[in-house]
Every structure is written in structure tokens, then in C-alpha cells.
Image 1 (cartoon, helix red, strand yellow):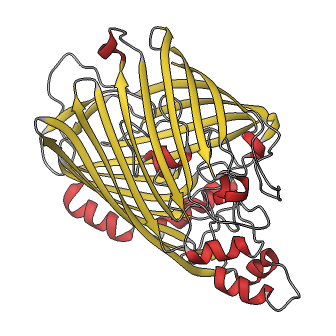
Image 2 (tube, rainbow, N blue to C red):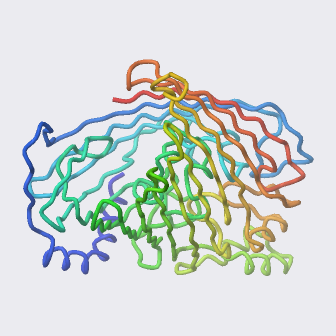
Image 3 (cartoon, rainbow, N blue to C red):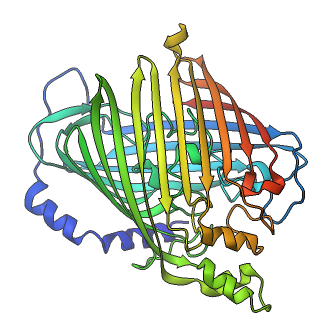
Amino acid sequence: MFAPFRHGLAASALLLGPIIALSSAVLAQGWSRPLGDQMPEDIRLNAQLTEFIQGYPSFRAAYSGQNSLPAGGQVRQTTSITAFLGVRLPWTGGEFYFNPEYFQGFGLGETLGIAGFTNGDAQKAGNRVGVLSVARAFWRQTFALGSETEWRAGDFNQIASYVPTGRVVMTVGKFAALDIFQTSSYAGDTRRQFWNWSIWSSAAWDFAADVRGYTQGVAVEIIPNPTLAIRYGALLLPSQPNGGQLPMRLNNLNHIVEIAYQHNWFGRPGVIKPFAFYSLGNMGKYTQAISISGLGVLDPDSGMAMTRRYGNRKWGYGVLLDQEIADNIGAFLRANWSDGRTETIAFTQIDRSVSFGLSFKGDLWNRPGHSAGIAVAQNDLSRFHKDFLVAGGTGVIVGDGALRYGSERLLETYYELPVFRENLFIAANYQLIHNPGYNRDRAGPVHVLGMRIHSRY
């Protein structure tokens, strides 16, 4: 279980030389903690339990294939239980976090058939019997850029403490890419907010992740002041599409750069986060796979396997905008694009995606603690990816054996209410999906109803 983690740390170490040199020369001083009522923590323990239940009735489909969402309708559930342990290390700015996680269940259709999948907790490796694994195990080091400090409240994987207002933060080990990059206040937490993959993530970014959604590597955040953050990550990709192994190779990395700028528009806070990524990994190429299968000996999937080489590349970019628009009302916009010439290796089969939504706090209708949201999204494929599916190819999540292409369009709405203080919540969810898997011959629409029970400590 821990061998891949050790390899990931070794891979991360290859990337740290310039960072450590800079840190030792400029940043490795301690910082003072101002007097106040807040008490810094040396250890922190949190936990969460989330149960998703989703189902849909039968829908219109001309045929079904290997990766199709079953047209007859079904109900599925997933359960996740996570412990979040944080410990302050015996030197200034050092912290270590460890998250064991239990997972059981399956997404709808074994988490296949919809590119913008409907359950954010569903893993592509479902389990009928629960499995315990290490979700995260990482070291975080903070270096001061000045003497001024600010209070940072405790949270999941965040020890309460004073931190430098200007700082450099380095994270090394095993974590989720979306813990650090493209985070959103309104559409970023599938256990409290929206569920759909193309709403809580910048879905055209085929972000580094193993089959359970975690990666290994290094992330560096430069925060010169409270309004600006510059982030860079070098994260290991799986050895094969939807794989569980993360080989330690410099030609097997997802590089991402993000800039986050906090602003006030018309007196309302918001943030804009443009990003770009460049991946090198063991990915096959769509045009080559189609050419090989056209010889009549191999099918498109077998042809794709022959084109996989470490160092094949994928790149893309996008932007996330979070904006408060009124008291207790927030909005988000995600727009992202990838070149779409190589196969999806880690996340989902989306090459272009746009999503927009609104989030509401219950204070708006005199129900403090309640929340609601509504969002829409459209997902599309590159012409290379589309041609591969038309030829009969499949991928990590969609592929019906044939394709009459149409944009995958969806709507999601949810309502969450507190059951017990800030510790137990229940939510209802509805999603409407047109052209699941981009297929107009299986257009549906699909009506997905869901319930979420979330407990936290």
C-alpha cells in the first residue's frame, strides 16, 4: 500500500532542488505570533461520512454498448468515510497530514456512460465490499516572505495557526489535485455543494489521479499578499488509463500553473483563476489508433493500446470565476479547453466544457444553515476524440460502439438542510442529462434523482 507513496515522494524530490535553494536563501526564517485570543493547534483530527443514493428511470436509447449508461434505469449508492489527521512538525512552518479512507459502492452504470458524471464521490473502481486505503499523506511547509502574520482557522487538513501574510507554501506527497488547484467557494465541494463532475471541476483538465482520484507529487504556492496567489504543480499520472499505479518518471507528469486574483467588483468579493496545463504521459493518440484499426486487423481500442508511449503530450487551459453578486448569493463560471489529440488517462472524456451556476444561502429565505444551488453545463469533444468514438472506440468512461454526435448538456439543482448543528446535513439533488456520452441515438433525456447524507466532525 505504501510503496507507491514512497516512489511518489522520490519523484517529487527530483523537482524540489530550485525551490529548496530559494527557500534556504530567503525564506527559512521563523515568524512571530501576535498575542490574541486564538490558540494555535499542534494536532487536529476531523472526520467525515457521506452517503450518496442516486437513481433514474428508463430512457430512450436506440442501442447500448460497452460503456453505455444502462437504458433500463437503476439505483446505486456510495459510502465514503475519511479521517483527517494533522500534526504540527517540530520546526517552524512544518505540518504533516494523513487521511485514511473507506469507500464502498458504485456509481450509476458502474460509473460509465456520462462524461459529466452525476456523483462526485463515485470512484471509477467501485467496490461491493468496502475497501480501506490511504487517500492522502503529505508534508506541507510554509516559508515567510515577511514578518506580518494573519490567523488561519482550523479545518479539514488545516491546522489552526498564525501564518505569514506573504508566504510560500510547498506540499509534497499524496493528495488530490483539486485540493489545491481550481478550487471554488460555490462549486468545489461535492459533499456539500454540486455533485456533477463537469460542475465542481474544470473538466477538460485531465488532472493527474489514480483510479481512486488521488495523485503524488509537489505543489508550490507563492502568495505575496492576500489578493494574489501563483500556484504550480508537478503531479504523477497513472501508468495506463484509469490505472492505480503512478510511475516515477519525468515523462509522466501533469504540470499545471494557476494564478488566483482576489478582487472586489461593485463592492462584492470574488476571485478569478486562469490556469494552463501540460501533460506528458503514457497516452495513446486518436489519429494513429484510427489509422491502425483502418487496416482491418485490430479494433480501435487495440489500435490505441499500440500507440501508447511515455512522453506523449496533452495541453490545455481555462478559467474559473467566483463572484458574490448579492447578499447570500454567489455565482461561478468555468470555461476550459484541451487539445484533445491524446486519450483521456485520468479523469473523464471532456475536451471542452463550460458551466455556470448560482449558489444561495438559506438566510435569503430566513432559513440559516440551509443552502441551494442551480447550474448548467455543456461538454464537448475534439474532432480527433469524436472520430475515435465514431469508429467504435471506447475510453475510461464513455463509448457506445458507435456515435451520432451531440453535445452533452446537463442541468443540476440541489437543496441542503442541517439536521444537527454543523455536524449532520441532508440534501436532495436533481440532474437532467441530454445526450449522455455525446450520443444523440441515446439522447434520453436522463432524469437522475439523488439524496446525500453528510456527517462531519
